[in-house]
Length: 377
Image (cartoon, rainbow, N blue to C red; front, side):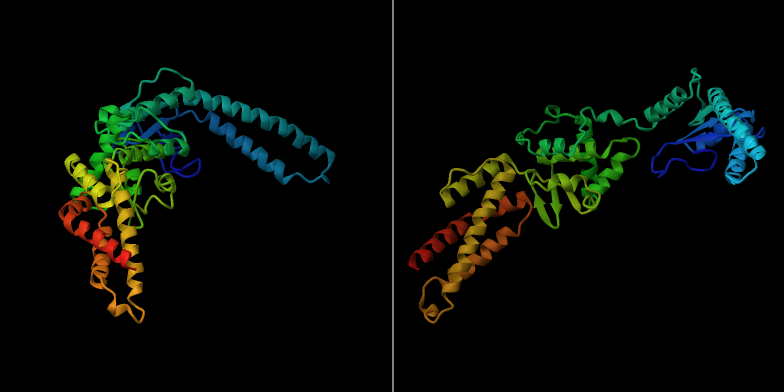
């Protein structure tokens, strides 16, 4: 920003570097004035140029010559006029170069204020002065910036995190970016405790600003790691997402998707319950392939339940022909459809597994009876 006018496109950063030129930095605006203003605007850095207007006078003179040259660009002008214009072009270049040199000197002599203090920056190189002032502000404003210790630079790296198979590790110490993981988890937990909906956009808005200042890809990577670690749940369009869903990376990063991606605190399922349900699944469906991983176990059970429901629906069609009323098992088929549909409506793993455990006898009954009815037909 130069004086009170923004420069350089969209102004969406938290830190503002404002160059104050001599017409603004008048004598009545002393050091105390800028200490006060920088204290009130604690995300501003003020570069207050000296009162010397010489570089501004050179710029104004150059601009007047430029304006004159453009207005007098006709080829039909007299040679004497063209000679004057050509001499002015040489003067124009000289004035631009001199104004640049004077501005560099003024920037080297500028007083710099931030957060109520006049900064003691010894170098007179303008670029280095700006960098040191900004670094000091970043260190103060983004005190949690170093929570991110391992960075990613592409969506492909994000997909690698999501494809990780190390899902059963529960200690944050075994993971990268421990403090960042804890900070994001704490934010989600607090929102959940307040019964407030959390979207990926909420998480981005929270951790892009101070005191964090993380970039969007790194925030997405933290959320991805929490998903892989089974610390959170992701929902899109009301459907739960697992880390191996190929669309998750896009939902975490695309601007038109982040507001639709809901993040929920995950209620952990005890290892004892997982083992019990896994044993039930193996016995009921006569398969040994059920995993002890919470997400995999739930997904495979849902596949089996959906298959049973589909079978009940197909069997139900048999009772619609003329002989239907005489076929046995109609009541079982109708009851089983409702039973499996009720189980499939449960989205939370803890509730789902608790229901399987509670209704083990019913599950065994309907799977067995449906098999008998199918055998009849």
